[in-house]
Length: 298
Image 1: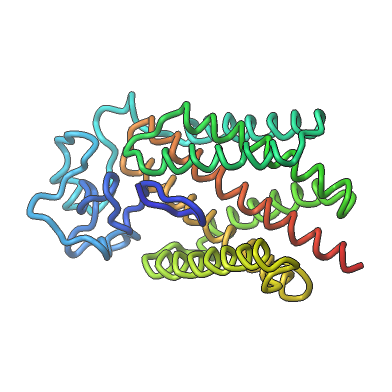
Image 2 (image 1 turned 120 degrees about the horizontal axis):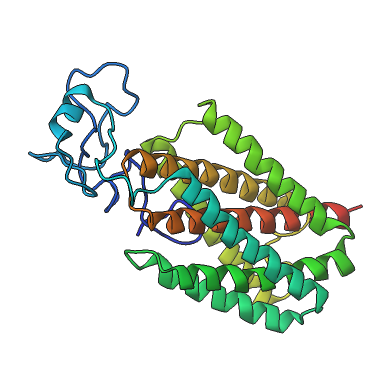
């Protein structure tokens, strides 16, 4: 599986990125020579065209007609296709578990060592799911619950000892980023292309490498490490992290849109929920860190 989020990889839904599964080659209903007015008629920038383009999810008797008209038609069998309702429902479940876990950790005043342990286990579950070709709901739900415990304990600590009210501000900020990016994506102000994806992956990789290096300096050298998480440089770094998360949301929206258009199996909606949840967690953590720095400088 490939990734559109800053931390892990998962299989993509994109009609443009050529990842395995949803777009191993040009799909039925994909680009056609001479097609006009089709936003996806440009073809797959990563994959070589095959002699017989087909939709990997269904035998569509209208495939040749779809190719002629250049429109991504849905398979004839619709009972097992992913829908927007499936994505919304499963995302609601995963985010609900995150919120429930956070509430439990907050109310019980969960100790930070236990919270860090829960976070590490959540990371392991996410990695296992990321390397599987198909979604495993148990792994995804386990990740959401444990990640919620981690977020609740960290938020409680920051809210109590660092910046009062920071947790609620981070929640509101995350919601604002989500709504803003959804509007920008739906109005096509932000367009997800192969170049957009490539540059975003490069930027996120650089961001993670710098974060890891800074953490190592903090562990072995003490203090603030290289200063990427404190002071003026920490503020800039936090803003960059939030922007990266926002752009990955656009990539998630693109994958959902393409998965529905190509008639992906219903079970793939779990992957969509998994990716959206991980991206929102990323944005929340960066938002919480940025607010902590800003209020700490007051």
